[in-house]
Image (cartoon, rainbow, N blue to C red; front, side):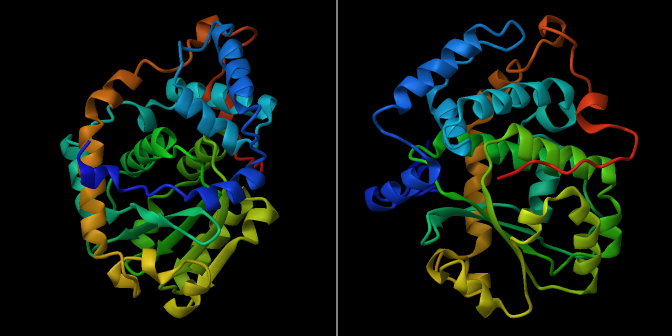
Length: 312
């Protein structure tokens, strides 16, 4: 890793880590025992791959507030999704032309600094409203690639994730590509297969279209999450939640142009190329699963009924 790409995720200070550990139910004296118990459980599951990445398992434990049962469910889903949803989890090579095209059209970088509460901030925005919507599955693939890097690199645990969605270039034509099945698939993957602690979603540069989009997504979300979505007609109200010093220049912040942050993340994704190739094998073997093999139908349902997703 280059020094620049290593610095892309600044870790919490020891003082902030103490606060975060309380929130995540992390006990320094017992966490290694919890880790060993999860590793023993993983080794006994005939359908799961051999997986002894302590750092990633610890990130799962933190995301599950050290509930061993919840952690087992999430890890099982993490590997299941890789087998069942290849459109999100295979061919993860950022140098492929299809992915190269997307990174020229959208910015989705996590910011390097943390909020005062110890949360990681991720900005998502399109660059040009006149460009047709790229392949949605490939966009989501990049989101999960960044998510997997974070599983490896969030060494000390963060309190949760804060998303800033910039709707400046969103048009109805872009939105039309986000069909209910693909949105559902994405949200199930995020919320049930990743140790995500979604704290806030901030929507900036809002328009009437944004209300339409929110109304479309809300049936998928529990009330608790709906209450964490904030709309900002003025960027200044965002600063009540996200400190200016960690925001890119475009949003009145001190962290430099978003293009620079995006370029460094692209470089990091390239550096992780060999690792992503190895990870292709990290998925369930449904033929060996005790009981009934899982299918897309089990996980996402094709009957049009949208069950609400469980998320903390």
